[in-house]
Length: 353
Image 1 (cartoon, helix red, strand yellow):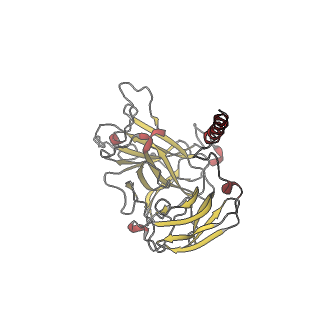
Image 2 (image 1 turned 120 degrees about the vertical axis):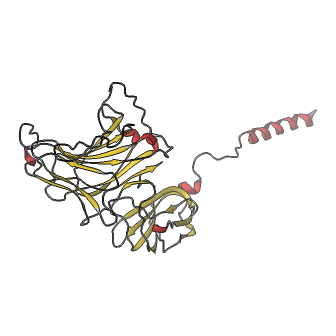
């Protein structure tokens, strides 16, 4: 009996320690918290002479002894463009961490040499390498609406306010965002809001993603000198089933307007204040657009990307004179809201990856 009494406490103690043992450790490891940081696998670039215009990618690989915040920064030595890729891990996996030649902010990368730096949060280590872009990204991965390289798209309609004092609604090649050409859109109308508009016919019947995953991307250029403080761009998207241009009657300025943007149709809008200098790329999911005429009789607003039949880019500005004066400080200033590279993308914005 004495032997049994000793055995029972032994099993109780054994059960206690086993019961308190877990296979999975909760929280960060001791190394992650207090260990000295070190590189376990060298920083490696796969494809150091990418031709992004042909679909090349650059892959990155590196390993560390602890989980850490890291950032890869790629800088174009000619364009000064920057691309940043960041993560939190103990491995930069070349099967996951890649670059397609896009930028995090304008300007775009060119055919140029680049410096690549890998840095770590709260660590002094900086790993460096270089690469040479032999073909730049053309940003054609999407549904291109207009890049103006060969003039205006087929069936495009351009119109401007009657008796406009000065206008710039023309193809130009002095300062394109991409390629060689862009569309200048602006002018001077002191007494009214509208300046002019560009109407483009679309067929997006092959699109399958919902409005939340369907993006309109557009480059907009504003003047860098004496900017008009009340200028903006309206983007109007129509899902009307009417013919694009069935009514051939010109407007007062002598130009035709598309017939699918009336307030009595299924039409959506977004307003963009243009208050910066130089080029910017703006991206909006279709779900951000508002109904042009909420509550329009007989109109069912369903916002389905594959029903989009046209897009209107309209330039407007706050009146600076006349009966509608709201912005007297802008008297005789030239409105400039030039555009380039209008493209729809699915699942992410143009610069989102």
